[in-house]
Length: 126
Image (cartoon, rainbow, N blue to C red; front, side, top):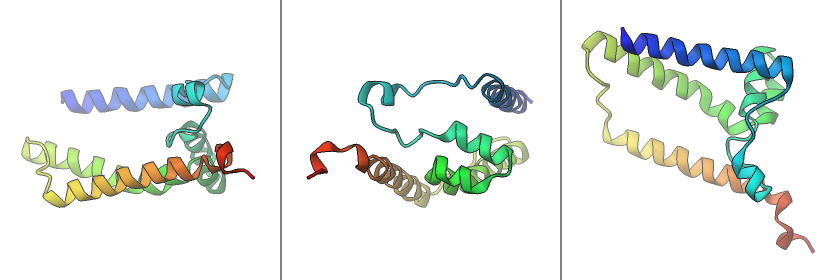
């Protein structure tokens, strides 16, 4: 019950943040971008969720394509984990291939962060 309450609170905070952002256009600034001037791999996730809430999938992909593509897996893993936890009363037993999958996601995230910043790399310009 405690986990269910915690998850409901987290979802409510997310919904309140999206409503707040939609009304005020004031979001949480990206510290990585403030310090470096580059886009972090997570930049655009708020805009992505706002676009999804409007069912504007092209805008969601444009805001953060990697997060949009990984979202179905994240939802699946989240539901699977908590369904197992509620049914068995213990955390989901992760197999060794989960480490490889998470490593691949981390590598993709790193590559995505590099590729999306190519226009900002001044040393690549002639």
